[in-house]
Amino acid sequence: MVERGEETPSVFRDGETVATKLRRIAEKARKEPRLKFTSLYHLMNEELLRECFKRLRRDAAAGMDKMTKDMYAANLDANLSDLIGRLHRMAYIPQPVRRKYIPKPGSNKQRPLGIPVLEDKLVQSGLVQILEAVYEQDFINDSYGFRPGRSCHSALRALSDTVESKPVNHIVEADIKGFFDHVNQEWLMKFLEYRIGDKRIQRMVKRFLKAGVYEDGETTVSDEGTPQGGVISPLLANIYLHYALDLWFEKVFRKRCTGIARLIRYADDFVVCFQYKPDAELFRREVSIRLGKFGLELEPTKTRVLEFGRFAVQNAKRRGERAETFDFLGLTHYCGTKRDGNGFRMKRITARKKFTAKLKDFKEWLKMARTMKTKELWKIVKAKLSGHYAYYGVTDNLRGISRFEEEVKKLLFKWLNRRGKRGCLNWQEFSEMVKRFPLPEPRIRVRMFGFSVN
Image 1 (cartoon, rainbow, N blue to C red):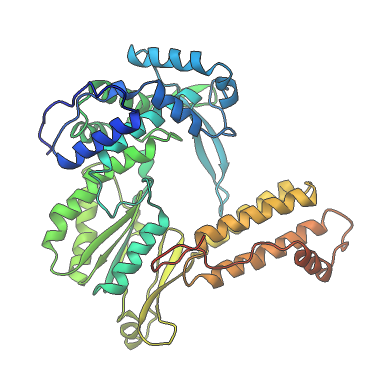
Image 2: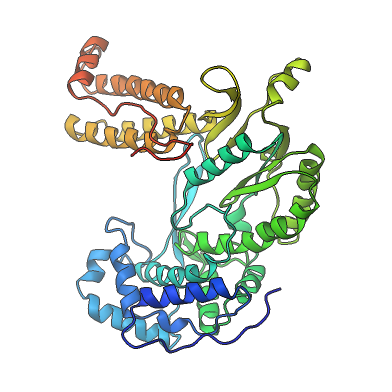
């Protein structure tokens, strides 16, 4: 339990920018981990919101009010002045998010997407900057999802370092079932109050939680979940899991382990490295109980204890089995050896499910885009391939991204052939076309050991 501390000064030195004020708050939060901040809402001013507006995507889909960035910018000063007035009178009421559905890659299902109105995006962005100043000082180092200066690759590097440099022999692979839809809002507000004593911040966060979803002419409001499609949702999720999972693991569970134990989390997806199997099995049992107290449930098909590490292959061979693998952040991790054949290395390849989903997603796009002019289509294909390599082009996964390029070429050949008479383009002609207008070459873009390659 965080004790109540002194009040935060509501008046800062004259002439300070919001960025300077936020740095000062961050420093205070770092030095006083039990301090409850009672005066933060005044930072929701023109300077902060104008900066947030600059960062909004110009091509983002509009919410219920159909307002776009260009439309809002046409009278920006007056719009911001009016918005700030409503915020500080506490007259600002978030609107329901507009729900639309997009195809879910790799399946026939549709994925729900929440689209907030433009002003809600602005206000949420401002709240995120204020809350991050406090919570970035609190979050554990091994929480990587949706945090400044951290990424999926940061989490993967931490995993590599742990498995290869520590006596890790077992992994608990875990996934929380429907996490963003099942966050208990009452618990979330309690967690928020540990550090944020400013009632206006609390009220505004609660209003976003209760804004609801607009679909088929009706608005529905739930007591569970975080704001759909909102930029504040990932931060609130991290706050929730910080108290429900991370602190419990660091302060309580790990102290009971007899060997090495490290939890690495990216949003609701996490793995835990253990030296000893009894510790891993105890965690698997107790984490279900712990999360259950806060309305969360582990996905049983994605949660298990497996043997993994430098002795896993030889132990599996003695049993007449193959060493187990696990998926984390779209990559399958398996036990291998160093390039010279001696010494253990954890290696990665694109997870089969992700590979299939990404390829299906590309095929669906190609079906819709095949009527484009070839030059324009080719430009987008190059961008898609570059994006794929930027994420999946990690150490040891050259085979995975090369295979993806091969399959993309086959799809291109097939759909370009359908634009004219059947057989108008043979494979040799297509190959010459690729030589003349080369696609990005699959290569390792992200080193898991030491640095990134841009």
